[in-house]
Length: 179
Image 1 (cartoon, rainbow, N blue to C red):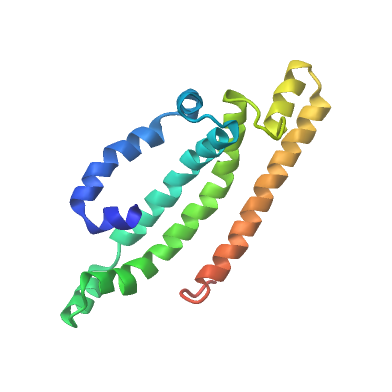
Image 2: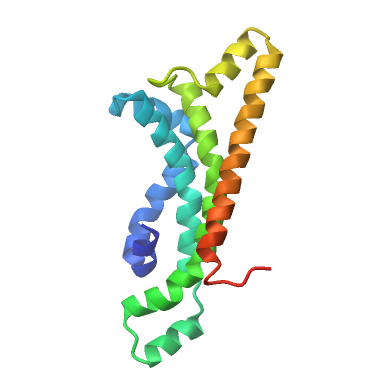
């Protein structure tokens, strides 16, 4: 979607209002609509996590695609490069670090989206998750279980970030020099 929006001003103008509305509307408000339109609780929870995680990736990638050096694009066009070649050889490599940054941001946000979904929508077919355990412990004033579930969630978020960081470093090591 970011590539389509970067290639066409009209596409960007058409999608921008929808992305802004969806991004600024709290997931707590969107979640009840997901329960109406999606029948499976697991799919509802994944949809919440994806909605939250999508925007940093989309926005960062779009910035990287559109902030490609004008001089580089003009040089490629001077040598007869097509629009597709400019995208492939200039814009996409320029957008890669932005895409990676969006992934790193989204890995933690997706976990937050899953927790919010479980708070709002309820538990999935696999039984209650950590968010349910936190709520249950809070209602029962069982701070030890609540703390344990919070530590597990934080550890999971840290694990997601480490895996994403390692994977993205491997992805971009061929294109960019990293300090």
